[in-house]
Structures are given as C-alpha cells and as structure tokens.
Image (cartoon, rainbow over all chains, first blue to last red; front, side):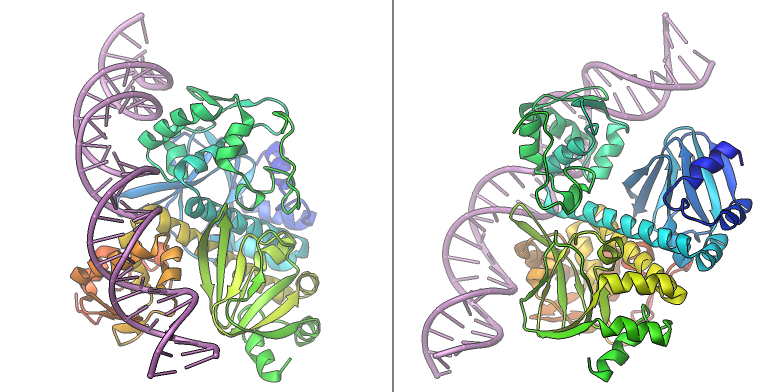
Length: 248
Length: 248
DNA sequence: CCCAAGGTTTGATCGAGGTCAAATTCTTGC
DNA sequence: GCAAGAATTTGACCTCGATCAAACCTTGGG
C-alpha cells in the first residue's frame, strides 16, 4: 500500500488515535485495490470478511428484496463501511457497488477484532464510529417515516448546500439514485424538483441553485435530530442557528 | 437497588462479561425506579445523561417532527436503550415513554464511559450491542423502503409467531402503535389485517391465529436480511430453513 | 353498574405517489 | 461526430394508503 494511502487512512477518526504498532499490524494484512465503476464490492448475505475503506471515488450501499432495490447511502472518501457486520462477524445487510472509478482498502475482519482487543484507543474509536453510524440510520428512518417525499427532497437539498457562502452546488449523484435514496421513483423526484421551483429551487441538469433559502426552509423545516449535527447549528444546540445568508 | 434487579441486569449480554468490581462501581451510581404508564422517560433533543435499562414493563421509543409522531420501536425487559447517544455524549434522537407500569434502571453516561475505558470485556460487549442496534435499524429501514404496508404487516406477524409450536399468539402492543411502527395509519392497518384473512390470518381482538402459514409466508416472503437472525434459520444461513409446521 | 374516554372498525372520499408509455436529453463507445 | 443506450422528463392514468366522519367496542373510574 502506498504511503500516501496509509496516511489518509491513518487520518480517519477510526484510526487516528491508534497505537503505531497496532496500526502497522492492521495494515499488513490489508489490500488496497482500484475498481472501475459499477463493480459489486460486496453482496448482502455474504459473510463479513473485510472492513472496507473508500479512499477515492464513491460507493453505493444498497439493498434488494424480491426484485426491488433501494439505495441506503452513498459512501465517499475517506470513510469506512460495513463496520458493524465485521465487528459482529455477521452477514452483510447491504450490498455495495462502485459508482465511479474508486480505490478501496480491505482490512480483514479478524485483524480488526484482534486490534480491537489490544488497543483501547482503537476500541473507543470503533464505538464512536458505530454509534455515529447507528444515529445516522435512525435519522434516515425518521426522515422516511415523518416527512413526505417533497419534504425529504427539500431537506436533502438544504443538507447539501455548501457550508459557507454559495447557495448553489452540484448534485453529486444521479437523480435516479437520489430518488431511490429518498424512497421515491425517478418520475416522482423529477416532478417534486419541478414543484420546488415555487419554493426557491432552480435545477439545471446536475446544478442546483437555491434562490429563496427561507422558502425552501419552510418546506423542509430542517432539524438537527433528523438532518444531522452538521446541518443547522451543532447537534443538540438548544437554539439551532439558521444560516445567515437569506436573513431571517 | 434490589439484588434480584442487579442479577437481572448483570445477566444482560452488555454486562455479563464485565469485571465484578467494575460492575459494582457502575451500579453504585445507578438508580432504579418504577413508573406508571404513559410517563415520558426521555425527550428527543435532550442531552444523554443516562443509559436506560428496562427491567419490567415496556417502553416505546418514538420520534416527532412538526406535529407528526412515529414509533420507532418497543423495548421490552430486559434490555437497554439509547446506548448510542450515551456513548457519543450526544442528544437523544428519540423520545421514550412507558406503555405500562415499568421499572427502569438509570446508569449515568459518564460512569458508562469510564467503565468502558477500564474494562475491555465491557468495551467489547458495548461494541457488540451497538452493532446489533445498528443492524436492527438498518433492517427496519429496509423493511420500510422495500416492502409495501401489507407485506410489512405480514412479515411482522411471522416474526411474532412463537419460536416453537403454536401458530397463534397475542399482539403485545396496541394496534395504534403497531400501525405507527409499520409506518401506516390505524385505519389502514385495520383494513390490511382484514385483507390478510384471505392469506391465512385470523384476528380477534389482540389474538392472532395463523391458519395458513404458507399463504402468509407467500405474502411476507421473509428473509433474515430484513426480518432478523431469529426469524428463519440463523442469520446468514445460506438455505434458510423454513418452519416445519405447515409442511412445504 | 354506568358512563366517559379512548381505541378500533367501517365507510366514503381524496390525493400523493406509483406505473406505464413515449418523447427528449445526456453519455459514451466506436 | 454518430449512433446506441441510458438517464431524465412529461403525460395519462390508477392504486395504495391517507383523511374525515361516524359508529362501535373496551376499559377503567366513580
């Protein structure tokens, strides 16, 4: 594995506080591979042999049932997926495929569990990571159960407004995938996007411009307890400070 | 805290392998209280001060948004809830209320985090528990996104058939709650239950009788990757062995 | 025992969102 | 640059499930 890659992985919150020796041992057994787009990395139901770390590209996590398929999340560099299955040594609940040319590091689950018992700092990091994953799925479930599709879309757009400054950005995934992630059909997404024109959203291809932040906010009514700590104010802040641009 | 209660908590997979001294220390700071029904134990958004352990009764985990409300799960003795929030020292994502007279042990989050760093066996147990929680929410999300409401109901019923023997049982929660858990209205649940009469389900009040297991299975098409390891065959078994009674 | 409150069922109606089909625009290999 | 294949959009239609309203049943307190 290249040193630059090692650096990047080392810098993940999951590995940052780890002992040097333990990290080195963990990486000795690891692979680092490049994949073209549309390659299936893991298939749901398989045994969880490797923790995966995306270092370049993008990976879609999706699930199937009886011919239907839904995307559960999109994993971007640099972060890990299917940690829970590895830890529990249980079958994957989701499949994963590359969305573009990607590089993925594979860390044997057994090594992971060994490192876990030997390195308290690592154990702590794993727990933190798992808890974060858990909370993120809970938010997804709340989003699905509490909001209508139009509201989910509006909230998604707000979540993806760049942290500072501009009120426009590119959708980083195909609308087809976005629709599936939001639990709706591509047709319905298309119509919902159009209907949000009246609420301050302009879409041209992949490019989204928020022309009326307050109007969109009125549709999405975002909250840290669904949209995550990074959206409006820090998670748990009692008075979530809305974005200033747009001036309340 | 009564010795009997301590025993029960000690026996949870989360605490079972813990060092005696550490367990004792953890319990010193803990409360154990009785609550009447319909008492709010925690409110989403609050800081996560205590890990909760239900020792008697039943607790509903639910979430609210803009006047809407949905039940996320029902926690029964003896198990814990909101572990993730405690570990991350982050605000609760869900609220909790008692559904019946219940007893709940409250363990200070700070003690929990201390014990975590001192006791490797406990750390391991926490990770296992968190991973299980994570996987359980993922399954819930898959259920919601991949199945229609009728199918979710059918699968729910199959999951609640007693492990051995009888094909009838009592719903342990109000239909109102079940509807909310399954992401549907009470009216729609009522109609869906009725429509399942044609698929081998008889309902009288709280009592459910599966008269045609195969017919119901054909509707629900259960799988370990959604319905959990305990349903059909062990999780990950390549050839999920269906229940024998009903003879394929 | 009766009443009030809340849960459940049923009926009627409506609307969000799914399905099907076709037109259109974007990608991409050649 | 072109043509084939996708992705996206648009339109027409329909279904599932929500909503509203009312009747019915259960349950617990006086």
